[in-house]
Image (tube, rainbow, N blue to C red; front, side, top):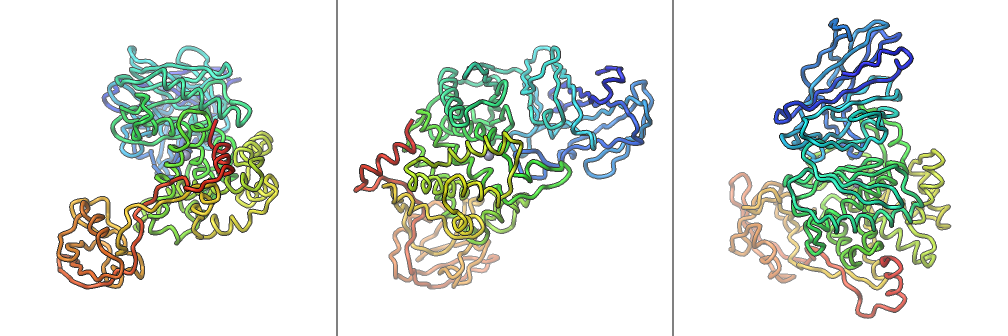
Length: 583
Ligand SMILES: [Zn+2]
């Protein structure tokens, strides 16, 4: 327990985080505040966490709330909504507010977590704030099992395990890891960068430090500085999944056990790790510092609304892969392949893509788990990423690489962030027009506020690249559910397609095509062999009633695409790709 006992420091709020019996999966938190004029204090746990537009209501994991004064007098506490505890107090009371947060990852793998060997937290899930006192300075002390190690992104150390944060925002933006940890570091321009992971997994320290230092140096040359005293790559190594979340001088990434072995040829693992780090590292500039206005003025009790998620995430997606080629870590062909696998094919295969604009997908990002197939905020990542790519190609083509998206981000950093400014979407367009010398209003109207298809193919053709159609197959107009693989369960039917004309709907099961039983496995190969113009017979079941119908196949369509250099690529085009991608 912390006790300063000095009235002159009364404005400081002190926090104490304890991990005792980690196998019970709890953080014990204590908050102390000296009551001045207040008749009551509201202690609130955020409903969401920065970096993810989702209401997680972590207050559902809070229990055993007790409040007393420093002298041990019980104070009255009443819960007034799902996340707020109101404590009656009188001037001079040193209020000691205690609670437990059960922390065991159920959803996103970067959620707060405590288990036998290690623990970590994402601040908004464990630390409550005092209403109207988020700007007050904070002191926080950590207590954990004796044989454990500890690493925090907080930088102002007062004494062993005791740190300062200038306000609540800084406290919750700095995660900590505890437990049996592996830790190593490298420096770029004299600034330390730490890699911290839960112990027990193999990792290629040499490869990781070599690649991450190249990456950090590339971003430093782009923005002119590394705006922190130190940076931590927190890695949660776990089978459970993927995901990462950005902070201003750290990030938490969830990596599968093979992800740290340093093999770039393994598409599943190390390459994914290094791309994740590139994405999260770019966020320390884009969104943690270069910020839309709506992201800068938020209330942790409820959602905030912005039409710029496509810029925050889609434009960051563009910096997930290309910097790795520019920094000499992976080849440009690997980068170009990701443009297709991660961006183009998901856009092409999204059944709902033409129903909402990127601005609308951004605004609606808080609405998770829509019943409508493919109606997801993830569109802001992959379609927003396509828009970033064609915008950069467009500026580079028009100016022979003198105006680029890199240059635009440098301008936003120098002229907006460093001057204490933020922007909305209209101001962003103005800034882009002023920077580039071109008018991108129509471009925004089509691809940001409208639903025009992003002309990625055309832009690739301009620089000597092309898309090749793969898996060409008879277009039936059916998208199968990926959740039920044992049968051909219909997720979505495209309007006016052959399946639509037969009256096939969601949840129906396609049983046979031309008498041959179908399932997920043979679906593509069966459709591949059907000629355009031929008539097919389908049987399907709806609520166990079997139906049959005949329909003509009017077209064949690609199932996906891959990227290739055009056979007649010119020297200028080759040169363009080099300037764009090479170190
Ligand atoms: Zn992101």
